Length: 152
Image (cartoon, rainbow, N blue to C red):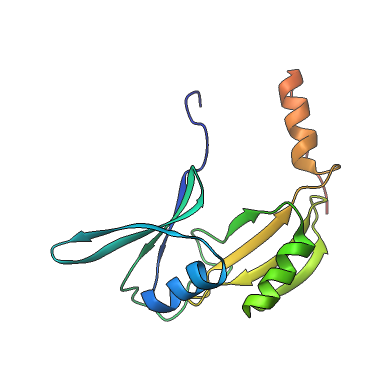
């Protein structure tokens, strides 16, 4: 749709705000931007991923873990990385274990996976030169794009 320029933020309901802030700010390095209070209590904490992409953390999640990967709803969010090996090394230093080690994905991009304290799945993706996404964008920009269907 014309006028939409990006995915601006992802919002997560978290069980324990202190644990989530330790993970996202302390270990992942996303600086806290500001907090919003409503009716005298914490409502949202905004974290910066980039200048125009944010993570919103909402406190007082009801369950101990995010829904499983087969549940209807958001399955995961993905963080783009320039060099996956550098990011994996930084995660190791921060004490964040990989839930899936670095591998080549079906879309020809490198990926690795982690989880936050609430079990939200986070993909780390390094776009590679032969990525299906890049091929599709080239085709779309050239006009006459037909949606390819791949079997993996």
